[in-house]
Amino acid sequence: MSTPGTAENPLRVAVVGSGPSGFYVTDALVKTAGLVAQVDLFDRLPTPYGLVRFGVAPDHQEVKRVTKVYAKTAEAPSVRWFGGVQFGKDLTMDDVRAHYHAVVFTTGAQTDRRLEVPGEDLKGSHPATQFVAWYNGHPDCRHLTFDLDTERAVVIGVGNVAIDVARMLCRTPEELAKTDIADHALEALRKSRVKEVLLVGRRGPAQAAFTSSELEEIGELADADAIARPDEVALDPLSKAELAAHPDRQTDLKLKMMEKYAAIGEGTKAKKLRLRFCLSPVELKGDAAGHVRGLRFVKNALVAGADGSIKAQATQTFEDVETGLVFRSVGYRGVALPGVPFDEKKGTIPNDAGRVVDAAKAPVVGAYTAGWIKRGPSGVIGTNRACAVETVKGLTADVAAGKVLAPSAPSRDAVTALLERRGVKWFTFAEWTKLDAVEVAKGAAAGRPRVKFTSPDEMRAAVS
Image (tube, rainbow, N blue to C red; front, side, top):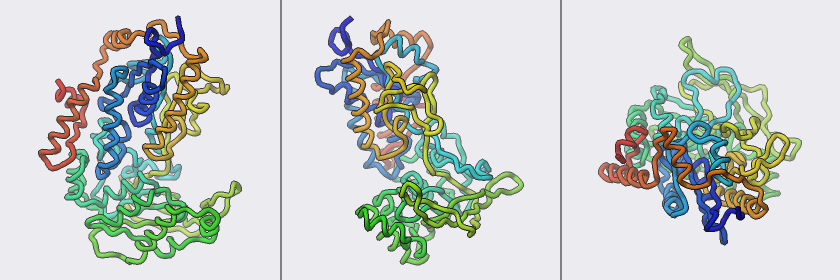
């Protein structure tokens, strides 16, 4: 048979994961000049958009508008979306080899890294991703509960996800009611007794990973003051030298904001969002019922690492904090997929510029990856576009060189017939479009962007 990529022999590609990276890969494939590609997007969940729907904070609606671009990609005649199809169960690697020339894994980084300290698994100690998924209405997390009957919560980490969690805990019910937060989370947060949230970083303010826009936002909360300690936002000699040698406008902006927060003292609002630096958790302490009741931190000094970076080094000074609720947000990692190579240390699929490689570093024919599962959790949503383009460039080069799979049953109908035989009831993009319209209409009636369905059964009922 001729080289795939023609009208007579279209290049058949499966994309596993329909978050931003999955759509960027799909878009790059169908827009490659001189290539006829048919792409099937698969997602374990019954809704598309991944991180945009379940990771972006409910009060960041402007970020979610990118889904309009993804929808145009999904509606292309050469693209099909299959919601509610789980790779490894409903569709296997053997199925991919039988029906596609290539597969691209874009499943993201779905879990949190651990603190690896005593007491981490006490009740009331949670991965930040669980809380984010809960308030965003993720079907897997809608039944979770969080003890909001405590006056102080601690968020360990100073990235954008950490600051999102802290901000959501500090929003008023009135502020939250204007977002697309899941109904169950809105009701729980209405009753929250949390009055103080600590956002804690192991290094200094110059090393904080959150963006200046996220930092500015916590200074504009309706009934919560953003507060910092003057001694902790004052730059250490190493950070001063680093900024002098490598000026960075964003870091300068953040430092000025944190100095402003340090100058307001305790503020006047009912809630307090405290930025803390140079602290590392060493132990979570619990009560007789196994519930977290406190945290012990060690004070860190900043030192120069062997690689020239600024590192945190523990001192002999400790600080104890009472709390009944702890969220860890110290990094994210991907989850292994059945039959696909996986780097347990990095939490990614091992690859060479997007080409999946095995333990011997040899390319796995027909297998590719993009996004956070490819490179680790870095960058913003738009960063995934360039990452996807790099992967597609390698894939199309392999097509030209004849280094892709030779499926025995490459027709589009063969895949749907396979899923039907297995009793898989998938969601189509047309059904998602209908569900989307229902959510938006329910939201409009309540003065909100949308009211989300969180149960797959409810979603099925809404579109049938």
